[in-house]
Structure formats: structure tokens, C-alpha cells
Length: 106
Image (cartoon, rainbow, N blue to C red; front, side, top):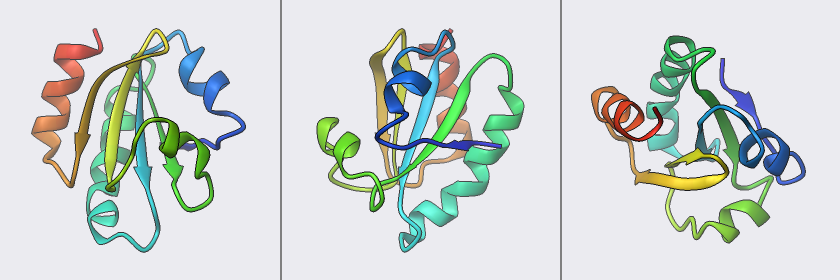
């Protein structure tokens, strides 16, 4: 299951993580976020041990989304070695997300 991450834990859980990390920036009121949520959870199970997948509620944590220029949700950002390597916005397909992860994370 994808862990929740906050502004206060972002650096430790994402930027300093030894694994690549996919961050799902979302909000509970966002329909497309709710639509992609189950896909994100499936990916968290499929990539367990190889990729860390976390979710950040943008309403509760405004600092980090602002830092990364999040203007629309859902936005998913893939980090590797503390750096952004890829970003997608919108409710994209599981196939598209898997392709992005496989090409950019490993």
C-alpha cells in the first residue's frame, strides 16, 4: 500500500530514499485522483521492494507541491537519487505509468 508523506517527512522519505520514489500528489475532492488511486495502489504492490510509492495530500501539505510547481492534480513525479526524472499530470493509464517507471526508474 502506498504510504502517505507530508511536507515534514518528504526529504527523508523521498529525497533521501535509496529506492526510486513515485509521488502521487492528490486531494480527496479530486475525481481524477480518486480514479487513479487504485492504479497507484496496484503499482505499489507490483513494485514492492524495487520502487517506493507515496501519496501526498496537496491540501494538507502546500509547501512541497508549491516547490515542485504542481498546478494540477493528480500529478505523479518520479524521483531517483533525490532528483526529478519524470512527471505526468492527469489520470493516465496503468500501462503508461508502468512504461514510465520501467524506462526511468531502473
